[in-house]
Length: 123
Image 1 (cartoon, rainbow, N blue to C red):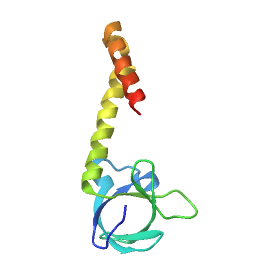
Image 2 (cartoon, helix red, strand yellow):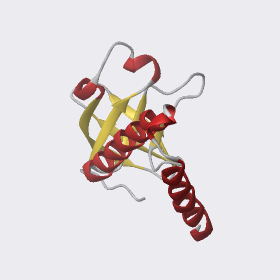
Image 3 (spheres, helix red, strand yellow):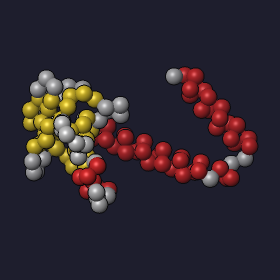
Image 4 (cartoon, one colour):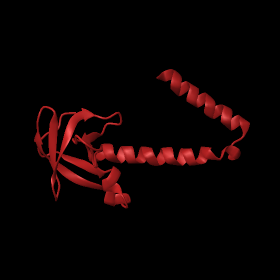
């Protein structure tokens, strides 16, 4: 994705920066202030942060740091952030349901297995 100066992005705290924080305290809106070939910079109400242009497997961007793990991750748009947040919530509910499979009949399990098999075949 190509970033533009003035574009609004979501800055999410991760790793050490996220310790003890929950919910809305983990994220804030930020503005792209400069764009270069390999990096872009965002500005928050506090300091500026530099990020790599290389996209992660999940569509986010890591903070540029040489010696340790990043404290922030960028989501390219508010819509994408909301979509990923909803995805995590749905996956969490599904995982919780399947950890205790006693609620499901054998017929239900067969149907679920068939759905999963069909999805794997499509990809």
